[in-house]
Image (cartoon, rainbow over all chains, first blue to last red; front, side):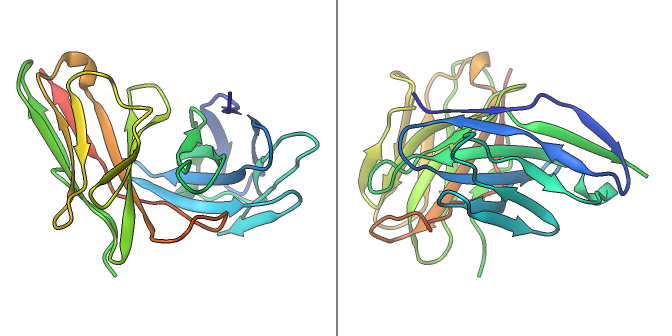
Length: 114
Length: 117
């Protein structure tokens, strides 16, 4: 079946460090891929997305490239800030029409220290 | 444009009581999704609804859980005879009415955190 695997956290970095959070998926065809962020006590916000192979999603300094050959969608940021401390979720959507549910990774907690 | 609204934000129930969670989608959105986030786990899809129709309920527990999205008013997720294992964060998301497609994005509400004593 369809699934998403994220690297386990927590991840602890110093401010201005480079961030990578790995995400790989299992799905047939061409799913759409998403990164959502959840700040403490809040709901989920869409961070970025990519809908076809080789697409790069980017937002707020974060980037992720849809790699079909490695079935991956790793999240990267060149220089993290304390305000980036949150839980990051990778997700896929397999289809459209009546099959629109998002399938989620377990989330990766990021703590950035000043 | 107001975002997805959920209420209550926090709900405490005793075992055996009923819990009703409400979700008002973003203006112009006619698709609603419910997800559950259990402690120390990721989110799991529960149900996908359009106005007056349940489209996909493959993630709903077979008993005690029901959902509706009436023509007027918010979507309701109802849990009857709650048990401690129902304690979780319940998130609602909405998306615009479209024929489907890769560009569709689901926008999430702040969630309702249910605690069953």
